[in-house]
Length: 188
Image (cartoon, rainbow, N blue to C red; front, side):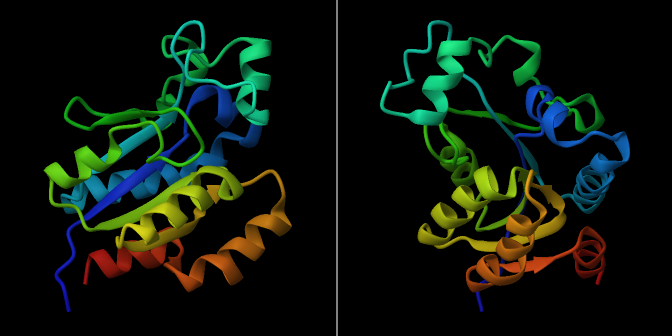
């Protein structure tokens, strides 16, 4: 069995997205707990956000989701909406990866950051389960990463979609567990 070298990915926990999904501050507690546990265990924490350059040069009119953002404006790199939420703010030595699509890998330097550190296992957290978590899990599985998903550190606007993904779809390619179960496994 290959020894794993893990990293915790905290994906799209940025102001403009959190404000739409986490109505109560306690909804972010599992994210905070996972970040604190990773730091304590010496596991690298990598923050991922979606943001665009001024003028949206990377957004095609053929992309239904992102062309709508382009038409409305917002979500550029410097805006409040694209900054990581203060409840899990990155420390100085923790990378912030900016992606240009749904998957954390697409249009970003995530893979370069992971390779530089010899990371071969990803612990996935994020908003939304049916967006960044699903897309990143699928791409990471195709890239042969060992994968874990922290089910209670993922959120989706549709509880049933979240349930189906975490209970039926994700287990085909990842170990799905709660934050507490993961912390117990790290401390063994």
